[in-house]
Each structure stands twice: as C-alpha cells, then as structure tokens.
Length: 584
Image 1 (cartoon, helix red, strand yellow):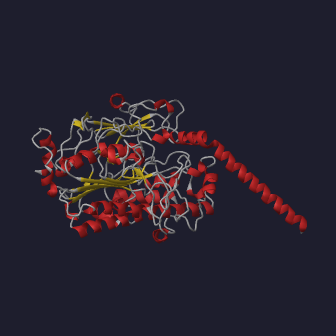
Image 2 (cartoon, helix red, strand yellow):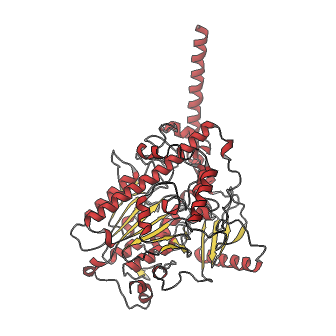
Image 3 (cartoon, rainbow, N blue to C red):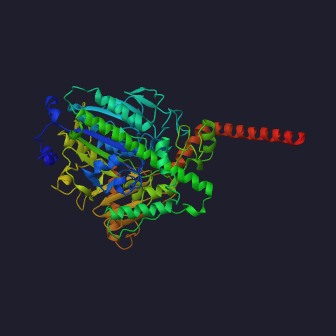
C-alpha cells in the first residue's frame, strides 16, 4: 500500500499526517558526495574501499542509469526542490555566470521564491530537519538553510574549501564562509570535513532525544572536491595503487562495471576527450605526483565512507537505523580541473603557504587534485567528466536503501536527480503543494521512484522527455535515446544522438542515420529550454575561463604583487650568490 501513496495523494485523498501520528514514519537521510564518478564506489566496481556504502547498496536499490547536472549548485537545487535547475533559480554556477545572465529568473544563484524545498515541506509536516556540509545556494539570510526549512544547519556556502582549516581553496573567495543556523561560524581546531559533517549531524539528531518526530538529515560532504585531502592513515593504503596510470585504471574500472552488469554487454568504453595526455609521456616526477594525488583522492572517499559508518553506528545505538531510509549519490561526475594551469595560481598557492610535496600530499597545508586524465578514469565507462553533459559528467552513483525500500538490486531505468524530493515526500506521506507560506509555488518536475521500486509502474515512458543544461552543456533524454551537446574546450558545441540502451559510452552518433529522430529530439530540447528559461551562452564563453576572468578582474593587482615579490626574491638570491662566488 505504501508504494501506491504517490498515486493516491494525487487524488487528494491523503493529507500530511498530523504531528502526533508521525512517530512511525521513516527518518530520511540524504548523503551527497561531491564530484564522485560513476565507478568510484566499491559497489560500482571501484578499487576504493567503501564498505558502509556498499552494505547499504546490498540491502536496497543500486541505480545504474541515474543522472544529475554536470555541475554542483544546479544539482543541489534540483535535489532539494524536485525542480529543473533553471526553474529552481540555479541554472549555472554563480561563480561562472556570464554578466549577460545576471539577475535572470533561471540564474539567481539562490533558490527562487516560487519553489519550496523538501525540507520545508517535511518540517511543516512535523519532521525535525538538519543539514551539515556544503550548501552553495547563496549566503544572504533569505538564501541560507533556516529560510528553506532547516531547523539546524552548519553549512559552507562556496563551491569548496580546505578540508583541514577554515580557509579558501580558490583566490576568488576571501575566506571559507561557514554558517551555523544562518550566522557566520568558526570551525573547531580539530576540524576535518568528513568527520565534522558527521559529528554535527549526530549532534542535531541527538537534540531530539525523547521527541516523537522523525528526522530529515542532509549530509553534504566535501569529499572528493578539490583540494583532495585525507588523513595519512587512509592515504597509505593506496600508495602505489595508481602507479600504472590513468589508462590502466580506466580500462580496469570499465571491465568491472561490465562484469557487474551495470552497463549492457557489448558496451564500448567511451573515449577520453581530445588533448589529454598519455601516461607514458609524463616524467617520473609527474607520474609520482599524479599517482599520489589519486591515492589521496581514494583515501578521501574512504574516509568519507568511514565517517558514514560512524553515523550509521550511532543510528543503530539509538535504535533508529531500521526505521531510516538512505539516499546516497554524487552531485556530478569527477572533477577534471587542474588549478595550477591557471596563470598565477601556483604563485597564489605559494603565497598562501600551500604545499604540493609528494611525501605529505593530502595532509594539512597541502593541495592536491587528480586532473582531467584521472577524472576520465573515474567516470568510466562514460565519456567526458564534470562540467560536461557526456555520461561521464552526469551519470553518477545512486543508492536507496532502508525502511520501506525493497531489496531491488540493480535498477537500470533512467532516473534523474529531481526524482529524489518527490520520492522523499512519498515515503513521508506528505503531499506536494501549489502554495506554501502564503505564496504560490511551482509544481515539482521530478517523479517519485516508489512505483518503480515496487514494480507497480515504469518510471518514465518512451515519449517522456527530460532535459538539462548548464553553461551551454546540454542533454535531453527520451526513451532509450539521448541528445547531447558539449561545449569547448573539450567539446565542439555540436549536437549528437546516441542510443543509451546499447551505447552508454557514447561512441556511435546516430544523427545522420536517424535524421527524423534527431530533429524531433532537437525540437523537444528547444521546448524544454523555452519552458525552463534556459538562456543561450554569449559567444566565446567558456565556463572555467569565466572564473579566471573574474579572478583577474578582481585580483590582478594581487597577482602582479606576488610576481614582483618573486622577481625581487629571485634577484636578491642571485645577488647573494654572486657575492659568495666573488669571495671564493
């Protein structure tokens, strides 16, 4: 009966349960990894140890055809609202928004006034609500979690930050803006991001001791976003694992994914984007640095899983575990950016005291990233990676397990990140609404997954179209087919058509072979873009170049000062050396 809740609610026969009757409804936990690739979790074929995540997958549903936005803030907006990102107000990263889009309804950089979060609906229905970790949906009072349904919150409103200290990881941010319950906050001395996020989530849950109300906990980890950092005891486990390089890892991940049946037999491995380096062309020093960086990346993911295990253990101690539903996913594909390629960035690292020493990489005061080649391996078997609409950028791991969730095993049906919010409402017996807090709100565009998980009904039909767009990178799914466009520098801006049922690696373009279908998909995408409020990107726009441009506009004087300081120090060192030579 529970699995039919969504259909029955649509008739208006079930209303939100009164607060005094809610003690039997499940707790809801959403665990969001940052930049984890499709094959990064152990349950998806990775060499990385994630036993706690894998155990949840074994008792629930593991999705092999789930998709998110190619970038983080739009995914987070869709996750919380069940709305297409532009309709939710977050169609692009605030940091990469071109000036022409500033203030447009789909590009506010915060949640729009005419959407409501799943947290707000759950709180109205009697749930206790809390969020810890990365927010990235605005830091004005009206944009922070207290204004969007969260009783308790300790969040970072930036695209990322250091995992050991309260400091920025990019020069576009003056600091790391953490907020507790809407007010600026200070991190503890013993801070490590994954540990702290779990500690605060536990604290917030424990505040409800004796309360009958269930809880909604949203844990938004910084793992494994740049800078990748992890305790030494986790890093040591992966020393030497990646010494054969990214091509070998990419092939091994692909073989494991195929062996587990996560993609169809006969799938071809998606191509690496043009212009990436071959492992054998690197110097021994470069190989050592990248292999160690990937080891830190793996260690950071395992550390996240370890602390998830602590969280699960705490729920078991409280007797809450069996009545809790877990949603575990990543916000997009793996991070390809290599910040040191940006002019002046290495000098900024030096100025800030960051080290890239191989021996200590991952520890406090160090700065690591895996780069586009290892990102391509982590996205295996998909093409591209984060930022792009290829499967490597948007097909991500997704697991649902716990109270009321059938042990469905692998789920191969297409699903989208907007489907999570309506699924949570379905589980909690809470209706979607057309008005909230005295204002009209748009209906959710996602669909509950419960009929699919229960076997009552398919999720999307062959004519249902689901579109997405971020910074010009775009896709539309309909039935087995996908229309996709990837922009420069790694894409060419052209549209391609693929059959996802047989070619999830996106290796065989069908546009010329199926021209009528191609044009129909193009028309469907244009309807999606019009209805969602998608704006065309200005000529010459590149997403990451926009960050560099804004940095230079804001901090050009700083970069010049650093370079002049380096020149002065080099000259001083040279004068000292000449004096030593003359004296000898």
